[in-house]
Amino acid sequence: MKNDEIRGIVLLPILLLAALTAYQGFFPKMATETFSELAILDRNMMTSDYPRELHVNESFTLYLYVGNHEGRVEYYSILVKLGNSSDFINETTPMNAPMIAVYEKILMENETWIHPVNLSIERAGVNLRLVVEMWIYDDAADDFRYHGRWNQLWLNVTSPKPP
Amino acid sequence: MDEKTLMLFILALTILSMIAVRPSGPSKAYGSSVASIENEEARGKIAGAYKAVAEAEEKGGDVSSLLVELNSIIDLVREAESKKDEAKMSEASARLDEVIEKASEIGDQGLAAARWKQNMTVLALGAELSVALIAYIYAPGAFWRIWMKVKGRWRVKAVEER
Image 1 (cartoon, rainbow over the protein chains, first blue to last red):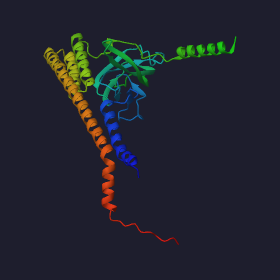
Image 2 (image 1 turned 45 degrees about the vertical axis):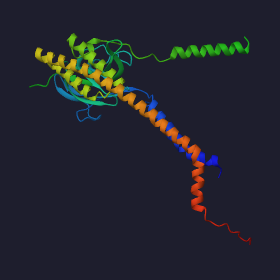
Image 3 (image 1 turned 180 degrees about the horizontal axis):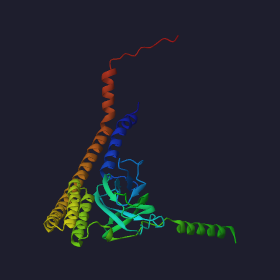
């Protein structure tokens, strides 16, 4: 065995360790795709038993699920709106409909928040849309900005139950 | 039209079409009416506290306790607003001031921790490279010394060929 081969065998693990130390010390964070999560869960915190048929002013419970994977602390405002089937919403335009509830929460990176919401609908209607929109506080604009995340439930609301 | 011009024309068309179908950037719909808190002063202060906490986090500080406090203050402000309770509103305002003050301290701690970590990395790198240099110089000698110790008393014996 030659001296250079001995040097190579001994130096390889040491240099690998040095490279690892330098990488962890100077490049601690990997750039990954950032995103936020928004979901509506039913009263059992599942996705199978959503209310479809309701009476006016009948209260029902849902859960909001919000997850922060934006790589930093985020300030969320979650809007609950009630619209019709003709009201428009997409990733860039929020729905222009009456707001029935607002919830705010500041979340750390990788933190999730499940929050119960008790709602009731004050008017009857067929194919009403209960829309949940996610807005995020924008430091530069000093205001909340529509984040393009939204969910909806279709509801048929009939006149109040007879006493 | 010669072949080169045609190629340039196709390239320009491709670039133009890519620009045309490029997805639009983040949505730009803003609205302060989406906040649940109507009191302008309280809302401004919460936003200020949030910015201070976000800055502290960017500097590497552990802001988890501040966020718990800030979320609890948001609930308190909403409660104070719904009940029109001035005492609770002033309590929330005082607590927000504390959050802003603590955020600055935690941000400084984060910066100090980052500097310490960087110094430790440089030290560790220096130590590892020193070990590498020592190994480069002395490893072959050490190897042969150990080899001699282990196999030095071995005798070489000629084996007859069959």
